[in-house]
Image 1 (cartoon, helix red, strand yellow):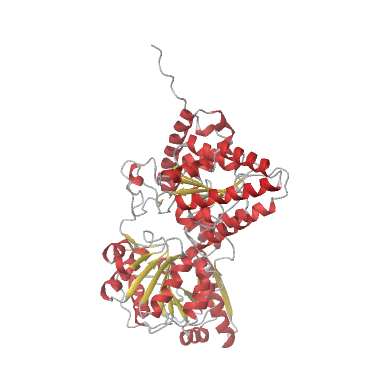
Image 2: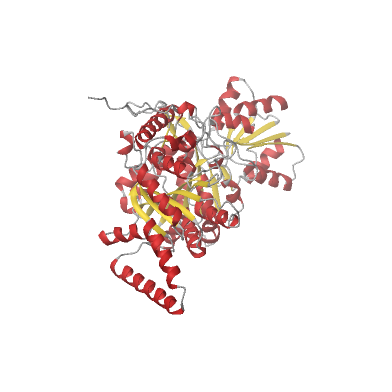
Length: 626
């Protein structure tokens, strides 16, 4: 009896391009997919990264690279963090991913010619593909243009705008919908499956083309053809529920098993023969291949810090520390608990912002609106109009999508809302697409908006209380991606009004340092260790600024260092310089802030050094000017 031939493993370290895929059997592809999943789990457990989403698209990515030649065709990842398998198949290694030593955790055009579209966030790929299709419509090689988009991304209004345009202009796009759990209603029933299959099969397309050509040879034949097509469509609409995609002018294929490479390839072959844009609806399992991620219902394993594979426990526990997100999560919880008119809104980020306890205990006043930032702000406006208090928890980088709603609706009408801006400032490994230092310039351009950031628990409590107690207007609380010692010595401030600063050190020295946020704690420690005597002021409220205290600082100091580690100069720095010029202040001003540029991935410490705003840079500047 002959032994069953053992399926070979293709060494991942030998991969230079996707061309090898075409030589593998389906059994070998299954082994490859398993090996890739193990590689993703291993490297994400060491460097952190987006785990569940990448495990879910392994088979889809393999099938796409087998079906197209992306040296000349185009593959657009709608959400750039789902690209780990794509990186492996195009010759890149995941070791040290998201660090200075390794590759980016997102699509990066500098890394590979296979990366052609750096998606900052989600839902934009279809519109980009529309433009690419128009640009390439007269090219001789007629490249295929493929987008891979997730179901939650497709629910964003931007994606629908792209879909509408695609269908209207009948652009030759192939959109692969990675549906890993959100509800999208497809065509259902036996007849629906039958029509879905026949409408995209090779035999049907060939027969339909021949039928059309035959009847269009005569005037009578044309009438018969048009009548028959009309009759077919009437019967189909009557018997079979059509999908949204059908109505938008797409050929809809699916839903199919997104982990069946053979089936995916079959559907792609059908898609290539369609005369309309195509949407392939693939059902996948988020976290597929790692048990703990597969049973995750709250999104913990979507993006993770380094962890122990066997137990799932994080490696960096930050014992003895508490995150600023945790501090504000507790403050928000207490506000929701004690005031029935307070509501919480978040666009798909409740886990990262430590808000899940609110979701569990107060489900009628907690709203996760998904990747719909514009809706989040307009929804908040409606709550405010109804005399409720909306608290919108939103990442700085995602907030930028909702600027119009903030400016023309909430602020203009002086409606009351609290915006907790998570991951404000430098964010570390996520890098240039997710940095959180551009939002402040927008807030400073607007009237009737206060902006604050705390360096300790007590100031966090006070600025949050001020926001709750205010009668109107938008109150912004920026929350850094940082930690605070749990045993921090409690500080009791006598009072703190909106716009107040605090004096931390006063020695009648010629140098004054104005800064804010958690980095001030590190600076104060260094000043103490190095026995440096200067005056230090905590600009808790960056907007409005404390004019009275600033006038006092200007009178008493020869040099003023304005340090902002969480924004560009188009925030606190320029605001202070403007007011100093009106006093007028004639002495020395030194500004230290984040450059107006996109800072690459790395640890926050590395990024602070790149931007020359670290505590080391501040201390060096002080010593130079003493």
